[in-house]
Structure formats: C-alpha cells, structure tokens
Length: 603
Image (cartoon, one colour):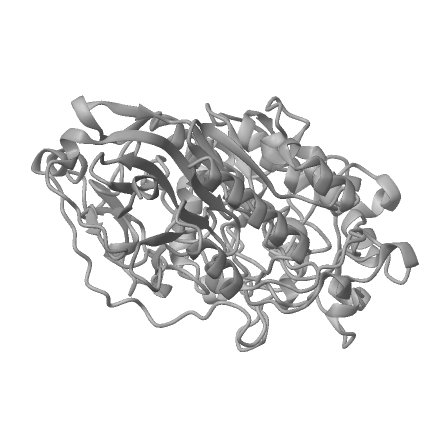
C-alpha cells in the first residue's frame, strides 16, 4: 500500500487490535503433525501447508513475541452474488485456471539517500517510511516464491479427485519500494531466480575516501546502526536494541549479514506484473525529480529535514545530521520505459507481461503505456491495469487515465464478444481509486519545467480521470467479468460487487502484502461447476520457512537465508507501527473461501 507517505486521511488507518472472532478448523491428523511443537513451534515449518490446516500467530500483548503455530482457517462458501451453491458440484466441477497472487514486496534498498526514515515519527502526517524487517525482505520473498512452487498442484480437488497444475503467478504491484533501478532488478531476479545480491554501493566512487575503509560498500550503513547515526533507540539496531526496541532480541552483525548474496529459487511458472505506486513514484507518493535522483545515486544520506517542503524534492540538511553511504548509479529512479525494459532482461520472453502492451497504445503514449491483456487458457482473458496516479504528491491512492479506461472498455468488450471469462488484476482495489490529480500535474517533460524521471512523458490527455466508481460501473456492466484482484491495502479482504438487478456481479479480491504481517499469498482457482455457476476458490498460504528463530545474543554471521526470512516474519509481527494489531489477516470470509457466481456463458 501506501503504508508510507500517508498524509492525513489519504493513507491507511490502523485501528485497535482486532477482536473479530475467528472460525478455525484443523483435521486431527494434521493437528498431530503440525501442532505437536506448539506453543514453542521449535523447528516446525509451514512447507506445503495452507492456512486451511495451520497458520501462524503470537502473543499481541507481549513486548516482543515469538511465533507459534495456530489452527487453520475454515473454508467458507460465499453466495453473495445470488448464485446458489448446489449440491454435488464437487463431482461435476472442472478447473478452468489455477494461479497464484503475490503482492507488495516493497523491496527496499535500505541504505539509499533517497529514503526518508527521518520522517517516520509518531504523531506526524507521515508514517511507515521505515520497517525493522525491511533489510530481510529479499530473503522473505525468496521463501514466498519457494512456497508457491510447492503448490504446483492445486489444494482443491476437481472431478475425479484431480488437482489442477499451476499456470502462472500474478504480482499486483509495489514490488519495489522506492522506484529505484536496483530494487526493480531485485524484483526480476527474485521472480526468475539466480544469484541475488541484496547489497548496493560501490567503493570510493564520487565520494572517494569519505565512504570509509576498503570493504565498506559490502557492509550495512544506515539508520539501523547506532554507530552510523550517533543516536540510540529510535530505530532497531540488532547489535544493541534500545528505546522502543529494548525488549527485542540482540543479533550481532545481522545488518551486515543481510547484505550477503544468496541463490534465489525463482518461480517455476511464468509471472505477470502490474505497476504499483511504489514501483512508479518515490516512496509511493513523490515525483522522481532530478534533485531526488541525484541524491539517490550519491553518498550523502540526510537524517533530518530543515523546513523546505518535501514536495519540492529538496533534501536540505545540516552536516551534523548527515551520514555518508557508498554511492551507486543503480539507485537512480526507473521511469516507465526503464521499468518495463528491466523486466525484459531476464528469461521470460514476454517481459512479465510488459511485452504484451498494445502497440497502438505504446506508440501513442510515447512508450508510457503499461497495461496489457493475454489469454493463459482458451476462454480466459486476463487484463493487467496500471492504477498508478502520475500527478499527485503525498497521495498513495490511484486512478485510471482516460486513454487506458477507453482501452479497457474495448478489451472487455472484445473478450465478452468471444464469451471469454475476464479476470482483471492491478495494484489499487476499487476502494483505493480515489486520487483526483491529473497526470499533467507531474509537469511536462518536453517543456523542461520539471526534470527527472518523474515528469509526464505521455502526450495524451489523462482527462477525464476515472476513479473507483467508474471502474466498478464498467465491470458490473459486463457479466463476463468475474473478478478484480488487487493489493495495496496490505490486508485480506474480499468484496462482492453485485449488479443492481441481482443477476450476478464480480468479486473484488485483495491480498495481504509480503512485507507486513501476516505476510501471506493467495492461491486462486476458477472452477466450472457445470450447473450454471462458477466457483473461485481462494486459499491463503504463509511462506514455508521455519518458525524457530535463534536465541537473543546469537551472532548472525552464520544465519542461513531461511533463518533470515524467519526473522523477517517475526519482526513484521512485532513491528510497533503495524503488526498484528490492525487486523490485516481479515475476517474469516476474506480468507479461505469458495466464491460462487452465475456462469455468464450460460445466459
């Protein structure tokens, strides 16, 4: 989401700890196998285990809680769209498409001078520009990917007790955290596999010996090292936790260990990416102005701002409130063409979907168009939309410009004419499409009024903008649209969008992030019940790493990648800004469900 740069009522609010009763079920055999180690959890992992059988929890009242196994979440049948869940559908149904959804990695190069941890203060308009687990996120995402690979066969049976094979994975935006080139390279590497280097920075460079002794670029320099920032307790320093983190475990050298390269597994099946606001704007809300781009590539990291509005892109600071980090040209910001080109550098020939952008839209937009459609199976059309608002600052919510909206109308119309079932995916759910700033507010690149990767390169007018109500009306008006799958909110939620005449509708599916608790992904499967109805099965999965974490005081030098991912999950639960307390797990009806709807092809 916009867990960062949230201003006033723009960002997400964090209510009190959830008291929603949870309906849970756990087969006896699974309980014996998985919960035997509870409450300590020991070395138990969740490999190839869905949340229907077991999930993860902790003690929300503890100053710092280790995680334990909890009973699974019962599957709920939802018939909100008016289609009855008929008996014997299990004996008839066949799978049309089985796929996975990942969202909101927010991979952050945590040492970047263009990040604004200094604004992450309680009782300010800004929040969550820093997370204690962010340096461990590459290892977490790798474990997420490995878990998806384990579910090559669907957990849901179709007729003849068969299980469909995974066709693809969709990634619904905010995979990078700060629009940086190196972050986007990490995204592609984690999706495709290979040697993943979570570090950045080069020796010497433009800053020479200021960047420290030889080898400093391979180590961590930033706000989670009290020796670097010369203060204690504001951020979590694993070498010597203090302040708000005094009760957290001590892991000497953890931040340096998190910079060491490792072998990423990569997804076994193709993946398709939709742009999120953190992929397309600085910290999810700011234009990538040239001053910010220069700062990102350089070596002076400010720890305080001195009165000049952040929206101007200036980073004034005093020498006493600046640290020196190794510079790196790869920390520059990726404009739309660069972002798409980086996805073409790997082994997936269609550039994770961006090579499928309509040629006419690409030419008319000066290379900016980032929406596309494809058919993974006969009779299924998947449409990726770009909901990133180009024009507004300090607003993380989205919109659709008019050229894209008219393309979407045509694409849905053509699919309906072929009697295809349509699944949309994008970053912002309908309730977050509220940003009224036109793209032109970013500044015209051609006029050189604004410079840098954040100006408006698209010569087409964005007006009239289209918000959530417009998209909802378009999708409701087309019976062949069965679902819109999104991220951004960092929570599990499923909404029924019913047509006014009661003749069905579509399902809005939102899935929690891979950076914040509960760090879950979704398996989705479309079934033809062969009785005039369809079912969309949703199954949440945790990543498969061990629940065990090392005792406090253990030196981190020998921690393996799985242990780092386990710590990342535990830190996310304990994050004092947004841990378990905001109810991101969702209600029972937002988790493991069967979503029944009329089959539009039977009309």
